[in-house]
Length: 391
Image (cartoon, rainbow, N blue to C red; front, top):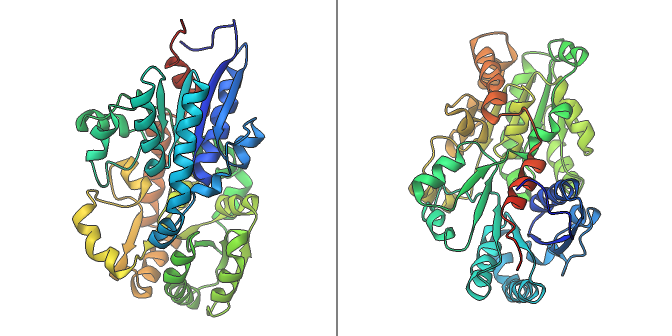
């Protein structure tokens, strides 16, 4: 069913546990409201974005946010308390449907408990865990408690089908709703091809990422700038400005730091090349058509175990979606200025390396299927299709 029955509002319980999930949840809520002739009543857990869409959160979403084993252990009693509180609220309120957004360590446990105690409540999971990268057994483990999984990446339904996961619907990545901000105008494309070339550098959003990549990124940029004039822009988050500024002050190049998201996307639209930490930003850059060198370093103990648990040919989302290693990546011991600088030089010049990345990124639109409804509206339709008639 594509729209709610017109007789009464439905009650949708939505749970997000982190900032990215809050953004997805807010857009989903707006999509549900757009499809609901009688309206939708929301309850659940979320942040500022979901609050702006009409949610009164059961408790502060930040209570669920923990990075690193130390934070997780320190907050574990509170997280367990919030988990029980969430399950109790679902059982008490008996919503028409429960939608769990990302945060698998929290939401999967909520789903299992609700399913045991209230098997008649439909449960939808929005965002697949990365079963295609590691711990593939999670797919099959989800099936008893998840009625429908909504996937952001086009290859994920086939993966879950192969692994025995829950029924999965591809709805699209939220970045597809921001293409107008990512794609250059004709004038911006001219600037992208003009001198001096503009280079965007993104050393990560986590403190540990910036610490590990800052020195090597600075050294690589110094070598690139020694051979040509180049304009360097570094977008970062306001909460990382002090750390980034201290690191950049030691770099042998002049860098303009920006903290506004609009300025970040403006830099993407005119950048000739990017140097970036691996992560979602690499997909942003690929959709923006920016040839990119990606790099990453993890802690020594993580580097030892990673080859034994990761089951993918690349850690970069654009490469996984494309099915080829189109974007250049240098990981761990390969993440050195000696390797990053020549790779950037190749992409700055007109040549095969640059052309191959641009051509590969141009194929993303067809693979993602950007025509038609935006992902948030597709997700809303998929959620409504799981609502069961009430007796």
